[in-house]
Image 1 (tube, rainbow, N blue to C red):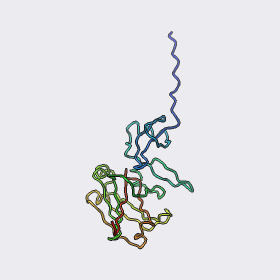
Image 2: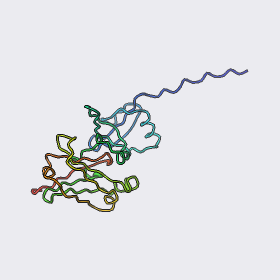
Image 3: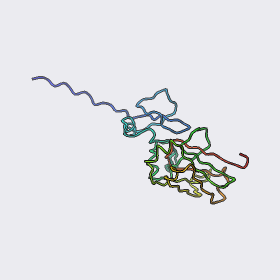
Length: 203
């Protein structure tokens, strides 16, 4: 009678996986089971996230990096962008900032002379999100620059309007909004890149 070969030891699954990202755009660039030198900045993620991404069940574009406040601690975490469009948590917001991104998915314009906010989506964003966010409401939050828990107002825009129109304009409602140096505008983690443009009388 032939002797059975001993079974090979179970495959070891690493306890640590690495999600490499772009600091400026907060886009996910690579995910690995070991450290690599190609990219500098990374987060440690769990096996389930790693497996969904390497198997193709989810796309890199489905995730963004965002600051998450838990109790007294704020940390940078990898978060599903599409889930955040539907399941709002006020601790998972992305502040729209002035930056050097050339073609952001979302451009928010603060227009002081006209006293209004203007919202623009790129063609790439419209193509990527039209199906995922069909008939959804996209929320923007005006908050104090030094106190993210102080909500000044919420702007609600129908996603289909964002997709079908070149620009959505929303008038200011309060004197707070006239002071762009004292406030921030934030949204949920939906967009792969974003940018704030400030229009003053001297622009």
